[in-house]
Amino acid sequence: MMRSFAWAFGFVCAASLANAQQPPAGAGGQRGGGQPPAPMTNLQIIPKDTPRPQVIATMQAFTQSLGVQCAYCHVDEGRGGRQDYASDDKPTKKAARGMMLLAREINDKLPAAVNKTATDTTRVGCATCHRGVPVPKQIIDIVTDAAATGGAAAGLARFKELRTQFYGGQAYDFSEGSLVAIAQRANTAQKADDALAYLQANLEYYPKSARTYLLMSQVHQAKNDKDAAIKDVEKALEIDPNNNQAKARLQQLKGQ
Image 1 (cartoon, one colour):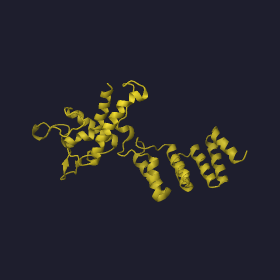
Image 2: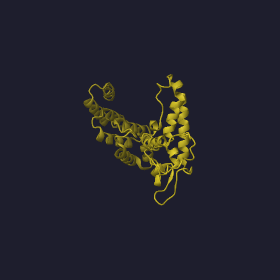
Image 3: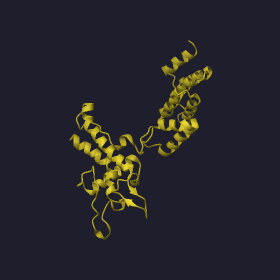
Image 4: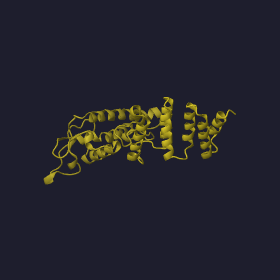
């Protein structure tokens, strides 16, 4: 049963690879003149005798998990262009095969790793990491990379761009702690002004975020602005009067 579960995941993640066997226009039915669709070719991981409708279903699951279209992995240049779904020209298709095999191996080993039966084990799938984007990079890394060349302004612009495009989906974390974590990384890198820019932006989305004010207090203290640091903590306590961390920090700042 464990192998059947692993194969099932591999089958879903092979959607793009299976799609190599025919253009999408004829994916669901017959070709013109009532002829049956052409047989699939170049199936390397999905069993060659897999029913066509099942292959089509896996293709759809694959593209949804990565938020892409068929042409991401396959040669499909649109109307009048080259269309060769069996081709292995694109590196993304080769990478998909490798990832499918890797995930299958992980799923084979998961039950023993978590000390559960095969049926009780939560297995990885394409969406486990990708969550609707082709490159599953964390937003903290994306923003930090953008800021490396353009400062906090570029980092925030990238954050807002992604938030506009993906908010409400599963691709990126836009919760209260996201910009806090980004600011923490900037502060650790001794970029206090960048950290404050991220935290001020976070207050636009979460004006009642005590966590944001607490980190602002740390950043202001690093800038030797004790008065601002105290005001930040007092604001955090105004929002969350029972925050013991804020209480302790306020006592520390006031030298009590």
